[in-house]
Length: 350
Image (cartoon, rainbow, N blue to C red; front, side, top):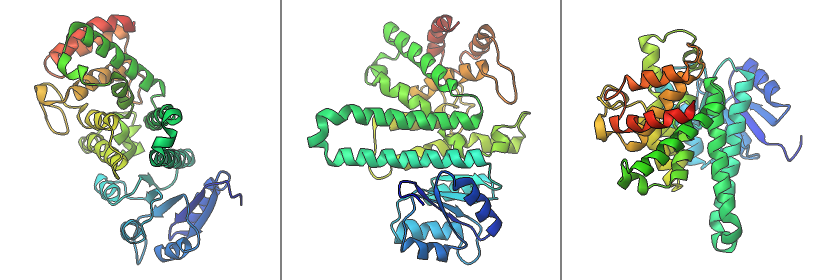
C-alpha cells in the first residue's frame, strides 16, 4: 500500500457489502474494512483514515451512536459518509444533524460512490490549505490572498459540478445560471433597480454563491431526482426538502467559524430560490419582499435554465417559449421588477 494514497475505512456488519465496497475503492485508495463499531474504535487507535464509510444499521452499536462517539468523545474530524438501505428524509436529516458529511444508499452505484468520496476528500484538502493560510496570514498575505480566492472558487466549482452530475443536467447548467445572473445584476445596476441592496453586495461573490443553490439535492434519492415521469405527492414533498437540506449543508461548511459573505449568500439562495412572489412557494411560503433578493434573483435564473435544459421528465423548450412561460408568471411566481429586467436581458441570451 502506498503512503501517498488516501485511506478509507469501511464499517459494515455485512461481509458482502464490505467486499463490494473494498473492490470498488482499492484501485484508487487504501481501503480497510471492519465489521462493527467496536472494531472501528480499535482500528482508530492505530490508524487514522482520511474518510470513513459507516453503515447505519448495525447490531450492538448503530451508525448514529457510533458517529456521536467519533465526533464528541474521540474528537475525530475526518468526514463520515453514512451507508444505508434506509432512504427516508428523516433518517438522512438525523444523520446530517449528527455530523455525517453525506448519505449513500445501498446497493452502491460505483461511479457515484467514487465521486462522492472524491468530492469530500477534495473539500477536506482545501479546508486544510485554508487553515494553513489563516494560521500564517501575516507571513503569507501578499502571495496567498490570490490562492485563497482560487481555492474558494475551486471548492464552489467542484461542489457545483457534483450537484449537476447527480442531477444529470450537465455542468453547463451552472455556466448558464451564472451568465443569466450576471446579466440581471449588470442591468439592475444600470437601471438602479434595488440599488441600495445590490450596491452593498460584491457581485463576484453573488455569482460564486449561485453555484451552490441546489446543493441540497445531494440529499435527494436518485430514484426521485432522476425519475423520468411525474413525481407522486410523497416524492414531491421529499424533493422540496432539498431547500432546507441545502441550508443544513452550508451550515456545516460554516461550522467552526468559517463564515463568509459568499456562504451567507449561498445559504439564502439554497433556502429561498423556490419561494414565490405570491406566497405559494416553499419551504416557508414567504411572499413579496419578505423573500430575500438573492432568492428572488435565483428563482428567475433557475427557472429559465430549467426550461431551457433537457431533464429526465422533459425535453428542452426554445428560448422564446421559456421567456413566454416566465413572463406569464408576472406577479405570481416572480418579482415584477425583476421580470422587467429579465425581459430586457433575455434578448441577449438568444
